[in-house]
Image (cartoon, rainbow, N blue to C red; front, side):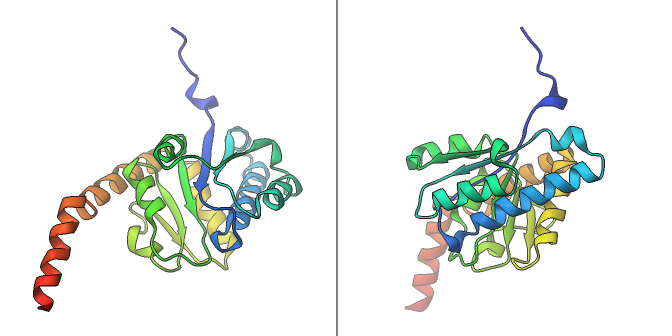
Length: 197
């Protein structure tokens, strides 16, 4: 049986989202491109060569985003999977080392919770319901949507430190199990309704 060389394995950054401006896929592409450049400029070439970007989803901006990846010089390390059935989403989330949600607006971070449930660390924008589902510095990072350098910095911290990725992943899974277990949530809602009567 062949043993994989862990140092050569890809570090996969990605998301599962519709290809629409509101979801900030363009910001993800640009931040990964800047991350790779930063790694190369600072002699982290071995890690830079392992970065991959996985984007799952379809939408009106797909072609434009594919062109952007090429323009940013990361077309060769970016895979656009297209739409997948809901039951297949965990399969793709489990291929990720870091899940990103750089949305410009978001009501609630269901996909972020799915990533945390799969023990994948997350980096999300500080908008809408996303900060509610991330414990900053524990299950992932919350970044300012207008500060690209902050996105790159947090991605850098995670790509160079596998132990931190694993720690955040474990914490994220515990967080979801403690706070978003279905039966527990139903009981909480029932109690709220009873208090309102």
